[in-house]
Length: 393
Ligand SMILES: *Cc1c(COP(=O)(O)O)cnc(C)c1O
Image (cartoon, rainbow, N blue to C red):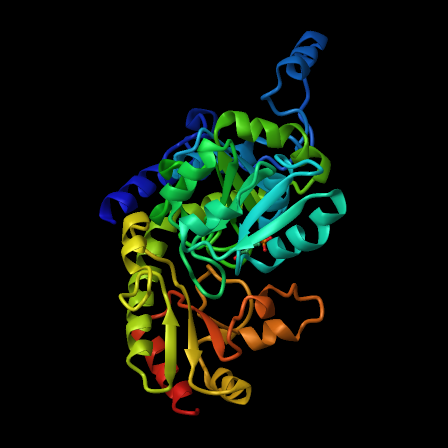
């Protein structure tokens, strides 16, 4: 883990712009400009012919580019492209590789709006999705067909934190020329680098740990240069989910503390998981780097650490879940995660929305499950808070 933290720290603090041009500013320049001008007809024409230079911000913006380059370096990818949200990144990264008649294979308990994209939108364009449990590579192999173009992974999965064997699945997909896409939001590139394990495309909701301060909604895709080029040619410009330069600048600020934040989230989450596992009113804790996780060994092979997000099944019913949540003082109730704050998000609340894609109900997420984000508050105070709320059950 310490090598990974040092590696990430070197990347997030390096100068990627010419500091001499900006008074050796330690903070990167924020270029809030929608367009960039040219001194001559020839330069203008050359920019269009060759590409790769700032012309218009729904294309390339130098501040956003700095963020993309940092994420590419962190993921060990050749290139990256930033988006206005994680969903902007996910829809552009999957649709870039799919056409009518193709199939997508996806893990169960995938992020809710990705589930919505695959089950509500893609079928209208003749693209079918098969869902797999994902914990057994041979089960995934059986779901692949000659029409499968994309294998979509999320390891660990949302709410239930099941892992997929990334090296094994990457190998299966490679042999069949299937593009593998993984949502790496949970682990961040500090703790999991799927491209080094043979995965093709990594997507992130940068709204979570990459930003890290609960003040930005953003997304990013990292991959080989030719795959990013395929995305930037069509789905990126036409869907238009473009990240603004100010948001990119905030992300660059957040990235500087990513390694220290992740180290702290990990330490605190391990303590919270251990505490919850020992509590009589807890049925089960879902945290991939906890010894009680059924895939703990696999977790150690592909994760060098874990984040602050876990879930707990309480020994109670929905009314008890409500009592538990209302008794929490430090953990606030809210969606999302990845910032300073500790948060509680009960599955029973997610189910209440008529618009909620049925991934929460369809795949058997128990109603007594509460997702917890272990934030950066002193862990002793968090344990006390949880102990107090569990006492209300
Ligand atoms: C939040 C989240 C997303 C969606 O990201 P947005 O930035 O909200 O669009 C995708 N995947 C995972 C795992 C997430 O937690």
